[in-house]
Every structure is written in structure tokens, then in C-alpha cells.
Image (cartoon, rainbow, N blue to C red; front, side, top):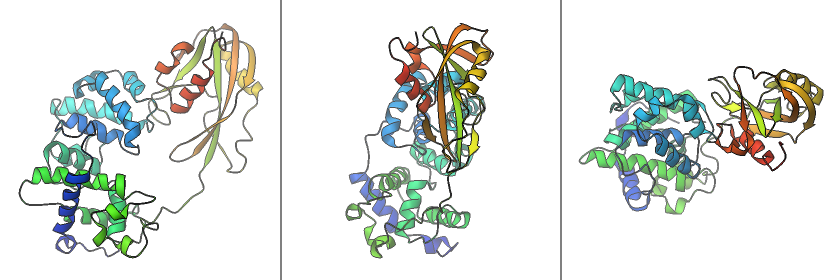
Length: 377
């Protein structure tokens, strides 16, 4: 890819015109965060949509707004409430940053999101591309986005033969994104349509697999289409072996309740409730599938701090993939004859209401399956 810094060479008014015309006729117009200039609603949708499909976000978005209708409501809410309403959406750092960002908007900007993308990008959880999207949708700011969908569109249209995640290539794509911004009359409306159009193209036509090139407004200028390389571009990130870890989960039950632990505010599943673990997340080799996981006896010994242990039973193991490693989970159900004093940071939760707890998705699924009549009597 030629790393040309001359924006006049990179500019192409026909590019933005094609995207805008297509978006107005064929793009998405009925999503709940569209057709509004409310920066709070736009910001919330942009954060939720990071690394998450629209279909998965819709329900969370509606429930979140019902509980936190304004940025002031969100800033004033307890962190536990925020995590509860985010529970299951994944990438929980987003929720912690969301809460921190709301507080800063209230404290620094009196509850009004700044219109300047540079100021937005200084807030927690808002990067350069997200800041540009918020500014474009809420005020028509002339600012470039470059999320994963846009990188894919650019890589195919302009024939980028290098992995777009490495910094020199990404920098060149940013220059391209800035040079292609629309100009002229009615710029606010054009910027909204152009920004949404780029997102829509990547999400609905220029998809990772089976792109619908026949309906793409950029087909006549697309290098990947012309050279038969839509399956090859964008260049994929070089693969690495996924690290693997294991942990043993304690499902300590007594009288229809299960013991949950409040996890630290940072790190994996930060701020959520979860099941107690014997030794945290322990590294294992990629070929032993957690074979070194501790025994039931080790689980019973660890559970003794919570009361007089009555019985133990190994449950079916689970797997969960994080961004940086795969976790093998080995749950052990432990019944108590009598409880000890509940340590700080732990809480007993009624199994009948387990769906209301702010739990990570795999833990909520496990406990939901176990919450059957008489199982925890």
C-alpha cells in the first residue's frame, strides 16, 4: 500500500457521494439510536456496538435506557446496578468505562457531551473513531471514523495488501478516511448519511464472508472485486496459538441459595458477581485441556471456609473464550450442613432469583441450568 500523505491525491468526492446516495436509499434507518441528535443515546449505542452485533445489543439498549434514561441517571447509579444491566453483553470493561464516562460528562461538562471529537476522545472508553461517530451523528461534525467495518471496506476497495491492524497501515487508512470525508453544502446531513453509510456497508454488504458485491455502490472502484480477492482482503491477523487456562468453580449451596463472590472492579469479569474460584485462572498447556485441574477433594477443602461441608459433586466442565485466552472451568457443587459466617465480599443469593444477579454469561447459564426444583433444597 502506498503511504501517501498528500490528501489531494487520496481524496475522491465520488466516493462519499456514492456512499451517501446508497445510504439514503438502501441503508438502515429504523434502529432505535438513529434519527436522533441526543448524544447520550448515540454514545450508549456506539459503546454497546463495539465488538457486538446489532441483534445482541437491541434488548440491552432498551432496558438500559429504561433504567438510566439520561447521563445524569447513569452517573448517579451504583456501579452494581450498571453491571447488572450490562450482565451478559460481555467485554465488561466497556461498562466500567461507561459509568466513569457518565460521571465525567456530568462533572466536567454539566451533563452535556462535548461536540468536539477531540474532547470526546479524552473521555473513558471513547477512542478516536467512536468520538468521531458520536460527533457526526449528534452534531454533523466533519470527522473520520475507522472502525472494523470501515477498515474492511477500505481494505477491499483500495486493495490494501497488508494487515490493517499494524500501525503504519492503520495510519495510512486514517489519512485515507480523512481525505474521503464529504464537503460542500448541507454538510451536517451529508456527514450523518456518510458515517452511517460506511457502517451499513460493512455490516450488511461488505461482510467478512460472502460479501454482496452485486449491490455494492463501490463495486466499480473496488480493487478486491476487480481482482477476485474479496476472500483474501482484508489481510487477516497472523494467527497465534490461543493460551489456555483453567479454574475450579465452587458452587456452594445451602437452603435454596448459592454463594457468590464480588469480583474486583478491574480484570476479567470485573465488578460482577461470580462463583468462588479455588486458585484463580491457572495456565495450562494447549494440549492438556486442563488435565491438571484440582480434585474434588481440593474443592471441598477450599469450601470449608464457608461452613461444614456435607457433600461434593463434580459438574460438567465448561469453556469460555476471552479476547486473550480460553478458560476451562471445572465446577464442583458443594452442599453444606451448616454455614460459617459469610466472609466479606461474598453474598448468598436465592437460586429462584438467579436471573437477576449481575453474573458473567457462562456463570449465569450454568446456574440457570441448575436452578431446578429441589436441586438446591
